[in-house]
Image 1 (cartoon, one colour):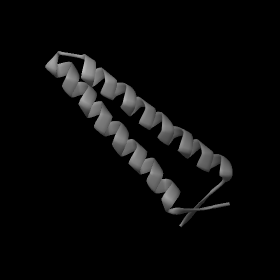
Image 2 (cartoon, one colour):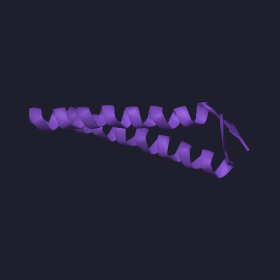
Image 3 (cartoon, one colour):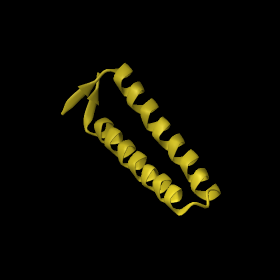
Image 4 (tube, rainbow, N blue to C red):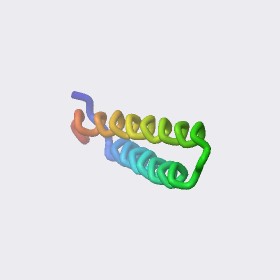
Length: 66
């Protein structure tokens, strides 16, 4: 089990929040655009950001905090 400093934990949390905010923005784009290709691109980007957030969260849940 890896150990994180408080600063590393804060950076991971900030990046998770950024991923979540980007997901929300992209969902707004999906709701506004009418072009099917652009809509699909935004939806794929949402999934990518969700996966990124899950990966980052995994680093937090599998560590000890120093």
